[in-house]
Length: 210
Ligand SMILES: Nc1ncnc2c1ncn2[C@@H]1O[C@H](COP(=O)(O)OP(=O)(O)OP(=O)(O)O)[C@@H](O)[C@H]1O
Image (tube, rainbow, N blue to C red; front, side):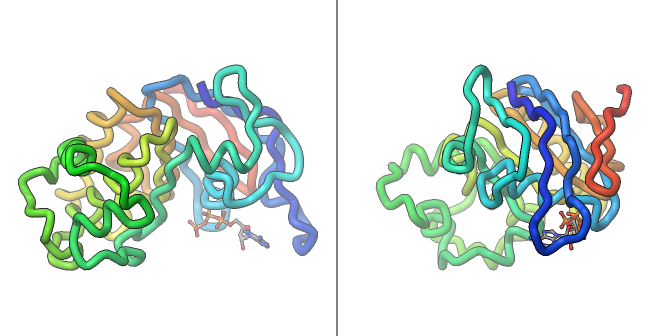
């Protein structure tokens, strides 16, 4: 279970806190969805939960273990908004093994199977994939590290309606094995597949009854 107790984030440079007293509990193998408008603090919250930024106050737990940024970098996998813009491999294999040359072919195959891309040749260029396939590859890049929590920032942004629906279906499949936390401003396809839902506004989180 991921648990946040009274998480606040107030960098010295900002007059107001960006996140205020955030409380959240997300059980394992569930999909948590945080919905909020632009500038409400969604990406900042994911940056904190993946250890890329440090919260000012509050506690983050995975089970009974209290986590600092270093632990969060280990247990969280973050898929950025428009992740395909950050691809740097010439092939699918290079992309998946980037920074992890020790990964076996079986691990690569398993990660691709998890996201429904195992029919593709390892030598395919990530740039030759469709928009939906590129999002799947970006998910596989994180899954191959076996994170405890997979976090996705606006996973349906820029996809057409059919690809958005397919991505929502994939998330349903992934939560059989993983705990997922998704943030978005456009929750249309994602709300029906969420187990827990919150709204975020001006850095404050409120639970939505499901
Ligand atoms: N380190 C920082 N220093 C100053 N301001 C920051 C910092 N990080 C984020 N902000 C501000 O905090 C607010 C929340 O930003 P954030 O990117 O988390 O929102 P968001 O909900 O993800 O919006 P979007 O969907 O547009 O990305 C914004 O006003 C942003 O400018």
